[in-house]
Image 1 (cartoon, rainbow, N blue to C red):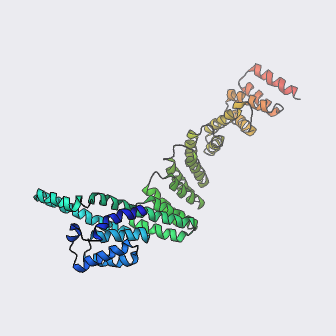
Image 2 (tube, rainbow, N blue to C red; image 1 turned 135 degrees about the vertical axis):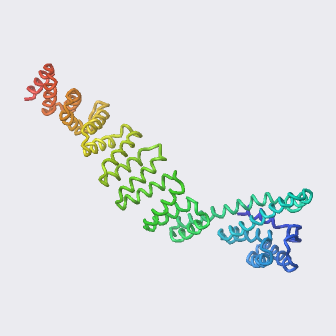
Image 3 (spheres, rainbow, N blue to C red; image 1 turned 45 degrees about the horizontal axis):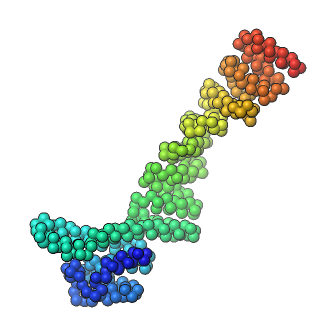
Length: 382
């Protein structure tokens, strides 16, 4: 802030002890010039409360007076912390400076020599190019300061006050995504989930890449048991999330809770593309495929699960193997049944059921060698 004051005071200092050519051209009366000098002296002595009404009197006489506009903006920005008001004066100052540049361009069209004199006297001497850049910066920084003040309100759990600040910002800058996101979070803290969802949706509409906002919308719909909408929003989030399967997985859960197995199946398949060895996803897909009456797919996914489980030559989920064996028998896939029946027998060598399954499979294949092998094993277990 000190840096800001230094910049603005350097701009205004030229009128403390006299009136510049530019200010003289702005048509102040004798009383107006007196008010301006007095205001500048009060401001130089840090008496901004006395300076402010005098500057306002100057602007009543001449609304385009640069020094008054500039220093009023400084007072509201740097001393009062009233950033919306400061921004109003920055905008007015920008308009005046742009008007001077426009006037210069108009003169240049008809009188090049006069234009050069105008530029030297009113633009170059007072460094209006630099002034304009600085004022634009601080105009924009007003919004940043307002956002920061709203964040402080959130940190101190003054959520209603935070919402009031963010509402003002939204009126000024209607396309600020951070404003709507923070407003949504504030409403969430107040347990106003309807408004929270509303402003998270607004955030996502303004920034279609905001994964967090989309996830929040999905989560709020999920909590309301509006599972289809929740799934749809998780899928929207997934479009921009190329790192994890989480959004597809959550979409699958939402659709599953809605009773829509087809949408759930599709979402979990996408999740599996990100994490091909995720046992939970694979088994879930096997179960959903069974609900969809797709026995082939259900069995295929269960095979994947068993293959992953048995890769280290141990079995953590014996039920997967036994269930798979019965599925393969029902599908008459006896060659594959032999493979997985052996795995069943390996982790449970005392299971007569496994040996019977293997014997029946070898019988269906008319493999007498295997039939004799499994028959002997069965007899040894008697």
